[in-house]
Image 1 (cartoon, rainbow, N blue to C red):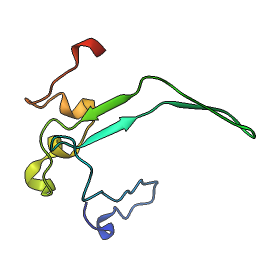
Image 2 (cartoon, helix red, strand yellow):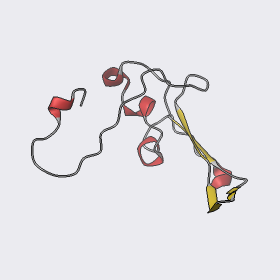
Image 3 (cartoon, rainbow, N blue to C red):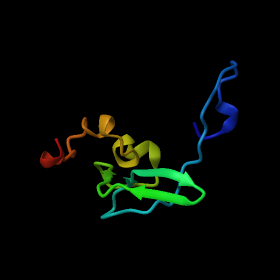
Image 4 (cartoon, rainbow, N blue to C red):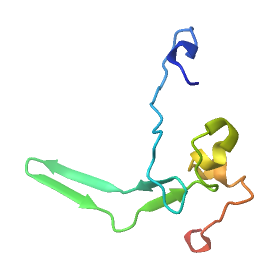
Amino acid sequence: MSDLKDLPKEEGEFVVSKYISNPFLISGHKFDLRVYVLITSVDPLKIYVFNEGLVRFASEPYSKDFIKAGKFSHLTNYSINKKSENFVQNKTAQ
C-alpha cells in the first residue's frame, strides 16, 4: 500500500514500515546485511560479534518504480528471489 488510509479497517495488529526510497546499492542492486551479535552484559558492556555474517541481494537491478520493476528488484528475501531467473545461489553456502 502507498497510503495509511488503505490500511484495513478491521481490528488487529499490523506492522507498518516506511520504505527507503533512496537505498544504498551495490552494482545497482539492493542488499541487506546480517551481523550476529551476542550481548552478555550491559554493565559492564560485553558484546561478541560472530565472525561470519550474511549478505543478501535482490536478483534484479533496483528501479525507483516499484510497480514496473517488480519484487525481484526491491526484495532481498531468499524465498522470493529463488524464483527469479536471475537468481544466483552461492554453492559453497549450502
